[in-house]
Structure formats: structure tokens, C-alpha cells
Length: 302
View (cartoon, helix red, strand yellow):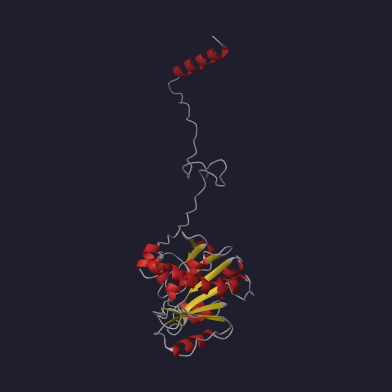
């Protein structure tokens, strides 16, 4: 019998003779929060037992079938035609936002979509413009639902109950980046409207709003922020929003929006920014849309 075997035999006999001796303790095992260790070459690491896992940021699924059924993207038979139209609309906006092939506008990365009255296709334009812009190379698109009284975009995308813009403005301890949600569409993210507030106009006109918009524009030179706003002639919120942006897309519905309403809406925007007009639902095949670009672009008479 070897020395090792003799030692083990004596330890066994001593333990058997002492019935009060404690059983050998089982080796301690850490209980990991992450179920499996990350692959060796992965950048992720396994969490230790004392660490708390941060909640995963949900990815917003852009269900195009559901959006099509809701009338927020074109029907299949018009998809290619309208996609081409939005390519024409977005090109000068992106150019002025990031200085690609054109002079970069001051606050040009902040683009507001608006309308004079409800029912002119503003939300349709915002969603389709965001989807088209997301196809661009070297840019990322942030769609902000700032129609805080009627947050159609947030509800359509299933994030109506998520904190968003208004929450950031009310609570200065919140970081706006933490509330931005990625989507299933590459290069497209969304900031929901958040909780409703009676003082929404004051919040949107506040210094906190100025800080938030400045941060969104300055923190990422490749980010274009597309802000869906309420109708200009019915709310004060949209006029407060217009103060912070460098470009405005004003949606005009063909054969519905009164000419004077368009002029009044442009007047509310002020004269220090680029105003771009989009004619929606035109029945004239040769002129499917009208797009004016430049400082205080104005609609044609008629």
C-alpha cells in the first residue's frame, strides 16, 4: 500500500470514529445570471453572480403588413412608384442635413414634418420618409414622435406605452439616449412621444427641449432627426417645435388643403428656416407630388 493510500485510510477511519464531525463542504458554485458563457471570440462576457444584468432594450418590429393595412405605407401595387417619389423628396433634405453635395444648413439635421390641418397625410409622410432615409449610406435616422397629444406613430409601432420625449423633458435625470428604441429596419430608431402632459407646449418650448435637440444633433454627426409634429394651425406645440429645427417638410393634401391655410402655416414657421412642401394624394399622373426647396418655399397659386 502506498503512502497516499495509507493517509487516505487513516483519514477515513478518523472520520468514521467521530460521528459529530461535519461532512465535507461541497465546493461553492457561483450562480451566473447569464445562462451560458459567451463564445471565446465574442465581445460579450459572462456576468458574475454579484452583478445585475441591465434590461435589454426592446427592438421595435416594423411590421409593414400591419402598417399597410393601417394605410401608413403604400399598397403593394403603388409601392415602387411612391418609393421613387420619396427618393426625390429625401435627397435634398439629407444633403442639407449632413452637407453631402450641398451646403450644410444650421440645425439641418433636425427636420420637422408638419401640416396645416389634420388629415393631410403628415404621419404617412413621416413614416415613409423615415423608411426611405434609412436606406441611405453613412447616416442613421431617428424618428421622433412629437405629436404628443395624438401620438399616432407611437401607437402604430406598438410603443405607445413606452417613455419618450415628454418624459425626458419632465425629468431631467433621464438620458434621452436610454429611451431611443432600435427597430427591425437597419439604421432606423424611434423616440416615442411618452406620457401626455397638460403643459406640453411649455415643455416643448423649454430650455430642456433646446438641450435635448442640440444633443441629438451634435452627439452623432451621421444622425438625421425626423420629428413628427402636430398640425400647425390647431396647436401651439408645433410652433414651439419649429423653433428648434433647421428644416421643415410641410405636407399639403391635393384638392383639400385651402390655399390660405398653407400660407398661414408657412407664416407660423417664421422666416429663418428652409420650408419644403410635399403635395400628397395628387390625382395628376404627370405631377405626383410638388416639392419646393429653399428658404420660405411657397406653394404655387391655384
